[in-house]
Image 1 (cartoon, one colour):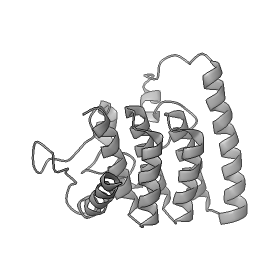
Image 2 (spheres, rainbow, N blue to C red):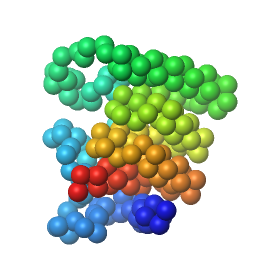
Image 3 (tube, one colour):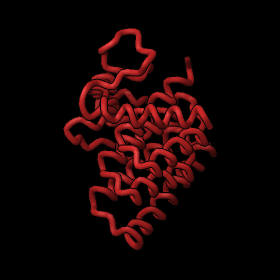
Image 4 (tube, helix red, strand yellow):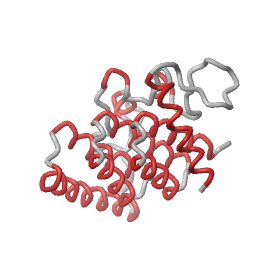
Amino acid sequence: MMTMRVRLAAAVVATVSVLGAVAVPASADTKGEPWVPPGLAREDQAEWKDGRPPGWSQGAKRGWRGRDCPPGLAKKGRCGEARVATPQAKSVEDAVRDGIERLRKWAREKLKLPPRALEAVLVGFEGAARNGVPAPVAERLVMATAERGVTAYGIEAITRALAYGARRGARPAELESFTAQALQREVPAEAIALGLYRLGAEVTR
């Protein structure tokens, strides 16, 4: 619990850095250097601008668009061959499809989200679920971001960071707890995303 509070406090502090100077963790070897999570592909590193998560700069519209591979790599034909539909893969497909249907209905009947925000919710949910975040967790978190009034860009940044953390092996419960507590405390989306990237980066240290 104490560790989570420390991380939340760090996320709040990081907000100042994200909106102004470059965000650098205390453990950075080179002071003043923009912090980039380890293990990112070269394309993702190029998108990491001034310590800000990929997809944040200039309001770029990012998303997986139904793929299990980032669009930048898909364009370059670097996503590999289509995966064989294993029972586990089918289970994920079912969970994603059902989740999207529920989210569409929820957004239409409860929040009446504008098209751009709805797109961010659906793309963010799908991307996170396809990248290792359990579908129920991804669904709860995108709903929470929308309910808290997080912008479309903020939803994209958070869900990409969730996917990164899941791929690095961070526990889903920890990712959810961190995000939920940060949203409840009204921590800005960019700081939440940075905190999630750090959670993922810490897994392999």
